[in-house]
Structures are given as structure tokens and as C-alpha cells.
Amino acid sequence: MSIVHRPSDEALAAFAAGTLDEGLALVVAIHLEIDPVSRQRLRDLEAVQGALLEAAEPAAMSGTFGVLPLASRGIADSGRPAAAPERGLPRVLRPYVIGPWRKIGFRIAMRRVDVPGAEARVFMLRAAPGVSLPHHKHSGLEWTTILSGAFEHDHGRFATGDFDEAGEEHVHTPRVDPVEGCTCISAVTGEVLFQGWLGRILQPLVRL
Image 1 (cartoon, rainbow, N blue to C red):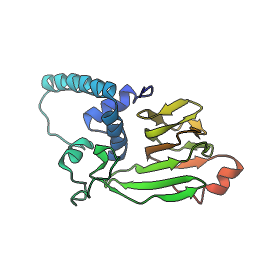
Image 2: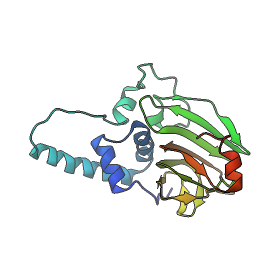
Image 3: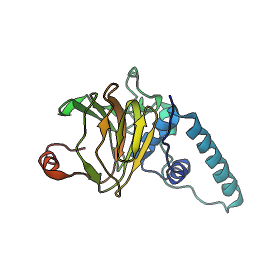
Image 4: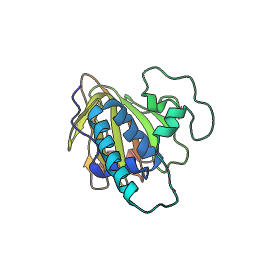
């Protein structure tokens, strides 16, 4: 496995500081579970932040502390014990309630991930080999970690372990690998805005 695309320094620093929305942080945490290079970058950032904290005046702690402490306890935000682990899922996902797969289009299925308190909507997406997803843009962020297979769009090819950090400036048409298909997990803020005549037909039918 050769990982090419990783979180930006800004995204990783926000994750290290515990200031990311929980849904976005979960998708970053899954990438970190897969990629040792990003884990080392995170350790480096934490070391820098720790040194700055030691030099700063003491202050009361506030804000959220990200996904990883919850995952290590095996308890979701709701306080309910985690369900029995599902084979094949990243370890970080196991504390969360995950819905069933449901079809949202031809050869495309989605399952929602319940991340209480998150602004971002988190879901897993599975697309069959060769599928092209509708041309779309976003009114917010779309952060994605590839769990298996691959897709490509205007900004490159993204395979297992890669992290796709899209924002409002990105307009793309993902095309799924014709042999492997693709399964990924995404956190989305704002709306997914489908483009073109087909997008206008699909918009009221598909709520990501």
C-alpha cells in the first residue's frame, strides 16, 4: 500500500489541538490508524504543541478533545456500551453506532455513522467498480479516507489509506476504480451540490 494523499498541516494541527469537529476528527483518526507517516507527523506536532504549552501561562482547559480518547475507552458519546466489533472495520470506528447499508443509486450504497455532537455528517460509501459519481461541489468541507479500493477525480487518484481533503473551492466528478471498486468514509459539513441536469434530478433524492 502506497499512500500519496495526507491531511494538510492545518488539519493535522487542529486534530492534535483537539479543536476539530468530532465528525471530521473521526475521519482523520481513521487515516492515522492506517498511515504510519501521518502518525509520526502527528507526534511531531504534539511535541511542538507540548513545548509551547509548557512555555505558556496556565489557563483553564476548554473545548473538545477529539475522537481518540473515546475510541480507547470503547464507549460512544451517548454513553452506551459499544456494540460487538464488526469485522473489517477500523478500530477507531468500533465505539460508534453504524447503520445498515442502503442503496442511494445504481451500484452505490451508503451507511451512516452516528457521531453524537458532531456538526459534520459522517457516512461510509461503497461503489461498485467503474461507477462514476455525479459531478458536484460543496458548500462546506468533505473529508474522506479510503478504506479499500480507489477512485480518481480532477485532483488525483485516491487509493486505500489516502485522505481527500475537499472544500468549497473543489468541484469534482469521482470515478471509481474499474477493477477494485471503492469503500470510503466521509465527513461532510454544509451541502453536497450536484451539478448539471442529472444533478438537479438527483438532488432531492440523495441526502448525504
